[in-house]
Image (cartoon, rainbow, N blue to C red; front, side, top):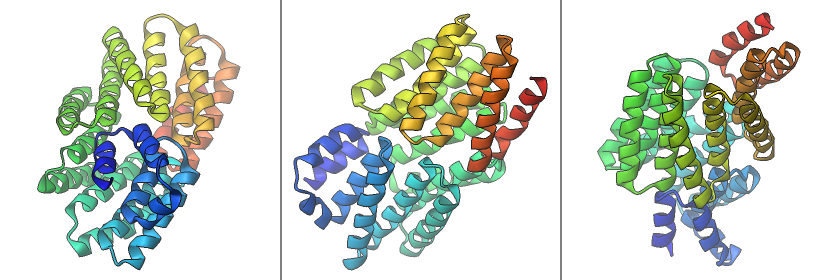
Length: 322
């Protein structure tokens, strides 16, 4: 059972993992720190933060009772990831710091890689790009040390975004290509699709709207097959950008408003902020300045609450233009 559950998790089939675990008694899952942790991670990946936090908490308690330091470290990191997805950035940083300290003490390179990767995400949100690059580079090295191509792929995927945020789209696309190759080699279908979505967005920013649309539509279909509603919503935001660039602003607006609704339901504040930012720019281009201003103000407040400092200046410029 543990082997099969791990295989589903490692291939990114989180909906299938939850379906498999649902056939077991909850008491059976709760007795196994590993199964409880996998259950929590799967729920978190699919947007159920409260349930995810519950199961990761059980995993942490069981791991401490059994002196299982490896699972305790992974559970602490998973707690941070859940908090980060829910927009509780300060709480996330505390969990990541604790998990990294435990991983360093235990010589656990795999979890050290996960912690460094997550810390890099926080730094990137805050616009601390040099520190983010350092964290991702450390993550790649740690994952390579233990032969985790899945981990390398995830760190490269995040590294590509930092390059894009800094305006180096060539480096972003090249790094995203490498992330896709590593994810596919690892057999992680969800991560491969996520990396391809990132690549589609960088191509869109580089003016290749038609190529980006084809790729993001294929990714969207892949995430729908996997039952990954969170990534599906993220894909729709990129698709909206491609639709706008290809001269269909009405479809782009409808899609972005759908993303905003889903982000609220899924409790994804960062996605809501990103979709609001994109919608504000679109409305401004359509000459609807008052609507653009209102949407931009809401997006700015969300980014500020998340500590995403790098997003504030562009939105301030948009608000001034409105």
